[in-house]
Image (tube, rainbow, N blue to C red; front, side):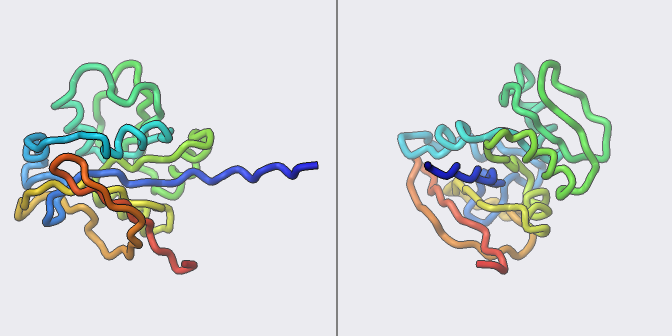
Length: 186
């Protein structure tokens, strides 16, 4: 008789694009600089990545940018999305958006329960991803590096986090890098 295969714990992944100098948005929380480059091509990690994504986590600034720049139908379908904020923000009708000011460890438990075996995506920003890392809940950083420097803006990860290189690829003008987060147990 075959023993049952243990269920895999969903990964918590920070999938994001950054300038070479480590900014995910410019000094005005704008991403226009990102949209000028060629891509995607066959190495685009997003197409494969999104297939394994269940719940999302995002900060209020990321949520507001999406609202301003893509005001139509919610791009993430019915995936549950926790928006971390201390402000009242408008809800996208028909979306699975939940606003929270709770700590990431508490919300992460809810996200994993809702994941149904799929991965958790920390969409942005960098400080939110860092909060997940601070409590040992960030597993991977999947980074598309754009060929530009911004000099200032929202940092990719505004704290020290040790990473291990797992994969490198090219996607049009972007270098795509996947890192695992090194924990004390590693």
